[in-house]
Amino acid sequence: MSPLKLLSIVVPSYNSENYLSRCLDTVVQGGDDVEVIVVDDGSTDHTADIAREYCSLYPGIVRLIQKENGGHGSAVNCGLQAAIGTFFKVVDSDDWLDPSAYRNVLDVLRKAESVDLIITNYVYEYFYAGKRNCVKFGNVLPVGEVITWDDMKRFRISQFMIMHAMIYRTEVLIKSGLRLPEHTFYVDNIFAYVPLPFVKKLMYVDCDLYRYFIGRADQSVNTEVMIKRIDQQLRVTRIMADSYDLFADVSSQKLQEYMLHYLSIMVAISLIHLYLSDNPADSKKAPELLEYIHSRDERLYQAVRSAFVNRFIRLLHKEGRHVTKAGFQIARRIYKFS
Image (cartoon, rainbow, N blue to C red; front, side):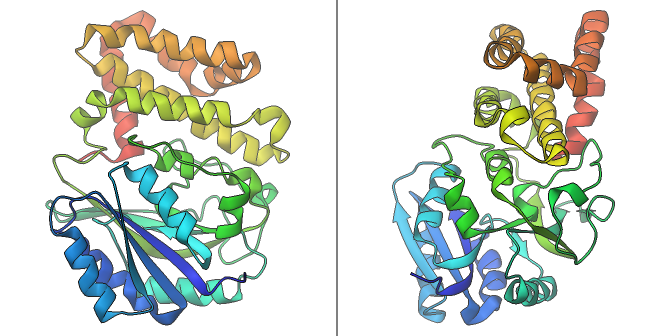
């Protein structure tokens, strides 16, 4: 069956009554070319009631799927399975889209017949502090051109094509076999990594589309929360490491380098948070992670160490926990902690 919509936007929602309306007010502005799938992931508040109101106000645009709680990845899986759009984007329920940039991107999608991935800017909105930080990709990708991975330049250490920057062709996600683990945080990294070898052509649109809310005390990228959830970070990192033999499965050398860069930073971030932890049991998990990668792929292990982790390990052996201060600053740049 041919796609029935230009763009499917999935809004994973769990106890989102305080901010879901702000999100939906922006995504419905795509009109009839867009379907908005609110996936209520077992909420216990009025999330579903709010979604039903929007279903009534915007019939044929907004629909609600309710399911038992399975976590962010489970909600994305559910939305992908239900999507009928040519393109697919995830917008978290506490985030929103810029209306002007949104219209611009939809115009691009209407003409993007051969493009598998659209990249846009995203903006960290430090809501309570009244600050924002925009992440752009003009140093890496030419603006408005259909390119291949071989046309890509080198990314800065804290620069990534994260989920918030990405609009995939739905068919690419299906072909990649993307399936996110349930009851696991940080699965957006898998979403931004696993489908990449299936992308043949991409385009960078230089507009500030996605607004990423930062500031909730319980947010998954809050420093203390990340340390408590380090086992989930480790799980995601292992899944990424297991996804490909980068040197055999990824034909483009530049994409291979980018994916190695991404994976190396994920490993380093895991190590940093393990050594920031006050839990004695966590100190054993750092060598276990490195040994896991070593046992799976010797070449990948050496490449990951050479890319970034070696510098961290040398400092760690020399200075012990003092290195976490430097490592933490790198982590803040990557994850933009509140």
